[in-house]
Image (tube, rainbow, N blue to C red; front, side, top):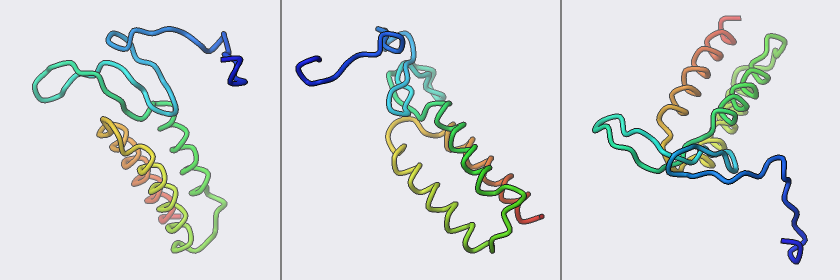
Length: 115
């Protein structure tokens, strides 16, 4: 690692058994997942909970009460943000993360338009 000019952060670096426990890397959570239809376990990846929370916080910043921009401009920025996020997280098991984001966007946009 030192030949490449890289150093490890010993506080963050751990060894994990990916077959038994989850770990986060580059916004994804890797590890064992339970198949909802047939009950089998498989190794997979999904957007991490931390990353979903970060996206919902950005949505809240855009749709804040003090934002008086016209809806077409706000909608364009929101759609660009969601397109970028979904493009990056297009790999792996995405259903639960996408549902959480969809629900948050629906409620936030509804409150924004109501105001």
